[in-house]
Amino acid sequence: MNILIIYAHPNCKSFNNAILKQVESSIPSTHKIKTIDLYKENFDPVLKFDEENKRRDLAKSPETCKYRDMIKEADKLIFIFPIWWSGMPAILKGFIDRVFVSGFAYSYKKIGLEGHLKGKSAWIITTMDAPAIALPFCNDYGKVLKNQILKPCGITPVKLTTLAQVESSSQEKRKLYLEKISVMATRI
Image 1 (spheres, rainbow, N blue to C red):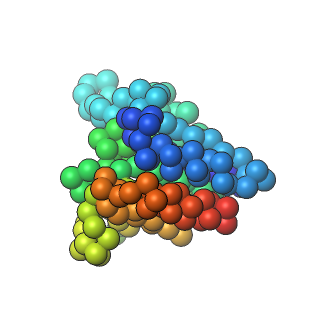
Image 2 (image 1 turned 90 degrees about the horizontal axis):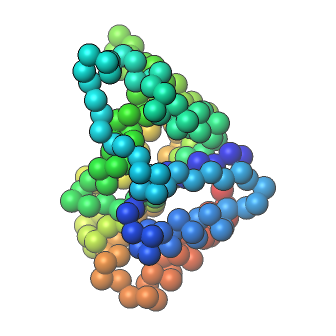
């Protein structure tokens, strides 16, 4: 299986980076893994519409061609990012705005969307500072990415793993989180 990891955290010493390394090292070697580290790649998240940049042409943009190709080749997408202020990092939101575009990821039907990324699955791993008890009441961007972006683009099933209260968690709790992620990654 071809697996594409889309990672968004600016600090290479963060717990999110530890999660990324755990996922990369735990996925069985029978799978092929590629990782897009949006911050390391200095991805430009700014969506531009003007005389030269038409919305209808985004699916043909040479600036995002390599990312579209990587998504096309992937059987499974894995997103790893923190939830900040109930949202995903701006760089990841810009990636979605510029890459998951009409004509590539979906097209419009009379009613709703037709997803063009069928046959792919996804795993979303997010971290947040909210306590676990609050998770059912949070409308965070892990849920938005799952239900309002990936599924309408035809990607299903989509698994969401949210690690809560990360900022105040002990090293022991973080170790348990990483072990959980490792077990999940080995079962891909």
